[in-house]
Length: 186
Figure 1: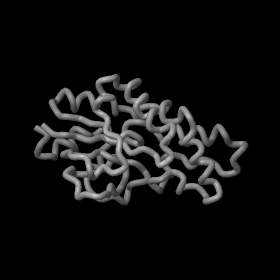
Figure 2 (figure 1 turned 60 degrees about the vertical axis):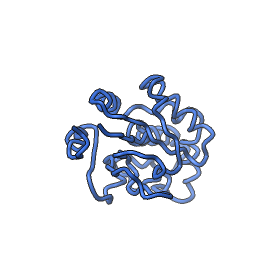
Figure 3 (figure 1 turned 90 degrees about the vertical axis):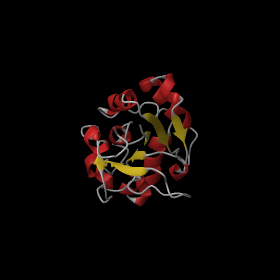
Figure 4 (figure 1 turned 90 degrees about the horizontal axis):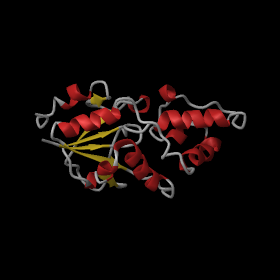
């Protein structure tokens, strides 16, 4: 069996659609249309907006309730439960925002609401995922770096803004096929 680390935002929780909807709802106020999820090209959402609007974008996702109310990405919750049922050790490995005040507690609330209390105990919250031991890290960030050479293999969770990343690309439609290529899967 494997120790599988799974990122939260952009992999389990749909950060993209909520950011876009919230921006669009605020438009009259914004002269710039929201960047639709399929048009996103930078890992950090605010970098897809003109410089003078980046603070406004950041205000959306640092506001109270943003992380708590993210919808689950289709198929994600079932996939986690299926990995666990196959006997793998599955952990949610997530980085807090630098402006952590709302997001950290709300990430825990999200997991509790959508997966239950037993999954809260499976959360690892860290700014540096290279310090966390594992066999696989499923993450939408194109390059995950830190203080250590990681023990895990990075499997990129497929998103429009990480198409430049090399290697295996996973989504919740093909995850069993992709993870099945890893020697520890069976």
